[in-house]
Length: 254
Image (cartoon, rainbow, N blue to C red; front, side, top):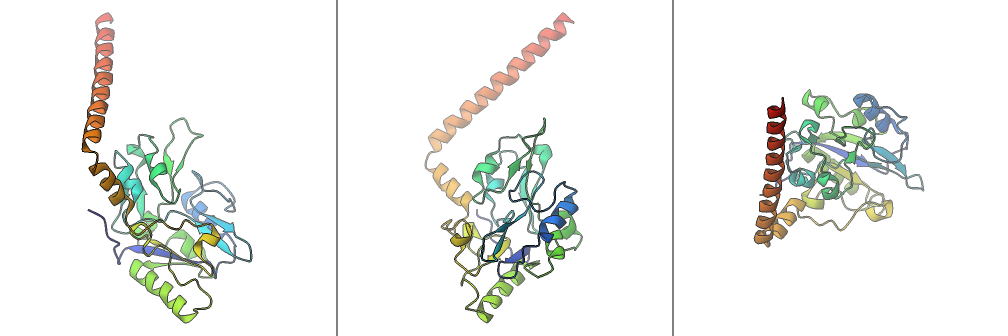
């Protein structure tokens, strides 16, 4: 069953028309997570959870996790390392991660990043400042923004604020709120003065949560899935049995 957007969950609204490109949001994110860097990076990575991109004509776009209402990263993860919290953020438990990177493939916004440089790598992405918000504090990025280009509140409040800005300045904004319906809705909204594709944002994602589409496809091939599960189980049993035999042989030799 698809997860519906919770109007009372925490959300963020980013307004392209108000962003001055100061990178204070990215710097605050770095500081909050004790990550290295200047805050002016242009690509998401294991220690960069948000970036501010110069799109020309004095327009700047933030890239971060969209915290989908029904996240495909969570549905794709075979060990439950990703969780959609009632508070709103999609959080990640690295202790459960197998390193399969299915989440990276599943994410329609290309957000999760892998710690390629570490001997025991895990996946990293924006956690919506879950710890801060659990204590009633705003996200680091919204607190740091000097121009109210990034603001926070409940999903209901942020959606209402976005529509209020559009209604009050119809010539200033493209008349849609990005994230209201995309892939079933997200907890990050974007307002833009131009169509979203002109900023390089992904459009045409549909309004159906991606986990629903995945299940619809898999349900049509139960035999294949069944055979696959049996095959994987057999591989696991053989590998596990081989390890048991090897351990027993070592014990006998000792």
